[in-house]
Image (cartoon, rainbow over all chains, first blue to last red; front, side, top):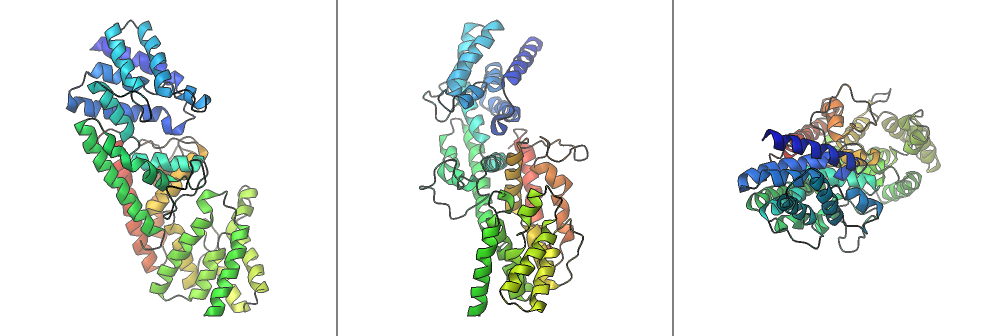
Length: 216
Length: 216
């Protein structure tokens, strides 16, 4: 166990050096939150924790490549390639590397590949959970500020709004996208948590709609 | 009543033309929210609604001057001067103008002047209420995104953090500033609403602190 912890710490340092904190919504804090969710779900679902922990630490190392290419490069694909090389250098068996790389390659909602192993399903769920609940609201409102859109428009028209407009606010993101995340969860514990976080978000918007009308 | 509504509509157009939407946290939506809160509190507290409505519409017209001067100009002072000129042009009596200008001059928490009339106290409360509750969270997280700070750090050290650092996030703002707003309210209804909105915020942070540890 001592050796495994050393390995995880070493790879954590490498991943952290690659990840640029300039992307607030996917900075190192996001990795830590996903890691902790993987710990929680992994213990309940009975996952291989070494595979899962390493996959969690490395899952977004392709983010900057996706960002720099303006979305042409898929961070899940790129991250899987980058992770494979890092893990080979640390002398992991090819079997383990393949399992970790599969988790990273399939963790993206919009990705072409589907999670097939328990560990990949857990990483997928943990990553989605970080866009729900209070932290999901916080991340999405921060994005609202990043792109300078309106804070809240309770009458936003989901269909007519394009991304990166002044109307691309948190409520629009919830109606157009986040409210469906709960239906895509792949593990039992992930689903349970997603439903609870979803309800918190839905209640938040019900409340804010009243507040902006001066009713609360 | 028809004449008064026309007057309010005309002055609304002028105020809207002055206010630049580039300041998301104090854009026209903020004015509308404060206006609706003034409607609500004003009816309950028995305010002069013409004075209060005009003060609400005009209360932030000095914002851009404060922003451009990097804080050297106080938007409440400047806004009061600007509003006085607008209201003279619309032929309001000096008595009414003085009452409206007093509201605008004294609405700022950090300002030197204290609200002395019922209408000024209501505007003060309404403006503070818009920094509390769900909308207060939304505005503060958006500001977090604007300045590129961390989304959430549950261990943030309130005393050591300077403004505009990567640690200047919503939670820091709550601990250092927003949690004390409820104690500064000046009307009964404002106080009631502030306590309720404060509790919602405190509960939100209790929750997000658990979420980031993977516990929810």
